[in-house]
Length: 164
Image 1 (cartoon, rainbow, N blue to C red):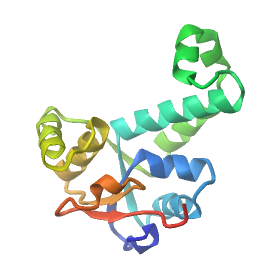
Image 2: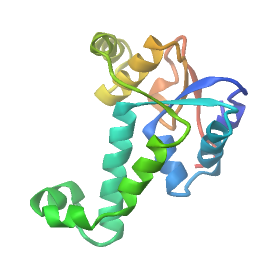
Image 3: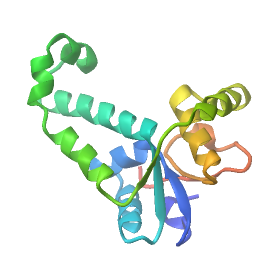
C-alpha cells in the first residue's frame, strides 16, 4: 500500500530509508508522512537502529556530496577524522529527528531473539530484523519502508512510497 494509505491515528514503524528519501527531497510522500507525524495525525516510531542507520548514511552522503571522499566514504572518513569534523549537515538532521515528534524505541535484549527468528523465517538482515522485532514488541505492526523484503511477512502491514 502507498504511504498515503496510512490511516489517521495509526502507529507506524518508520524505516531509515523513509527518513533519507524525505530529507534528500527524493519522495514527496516520505516528506508528507513526516509532516503527518509532526501534526500528530500519525504516530511515527523509530528505533535507535534506524536513527543510527540514518545518521551513518547521511554522513556518507554529505561527505560524498562535498567531495571529501571518493567511492568509499567510510574508509576515507575513518582514515582522516579531520574530514568528519568538517561535516555539519548530517548532525543537524539527526538532531531534528530526535527533537521532533517521532517516538524513538531502544532495542531490548529480547529483541535479538525475535530478530534471529525473523532472519531465519523471512531472510531479513540484522538491522531490518531488529527494527521489526522492536516494533512488534511494542505492538506496532505497520511499517513504512521502501524495502521489498517485508512484503510477505504475515501480520505486518507494509506502506511504501510509490513516487520513487
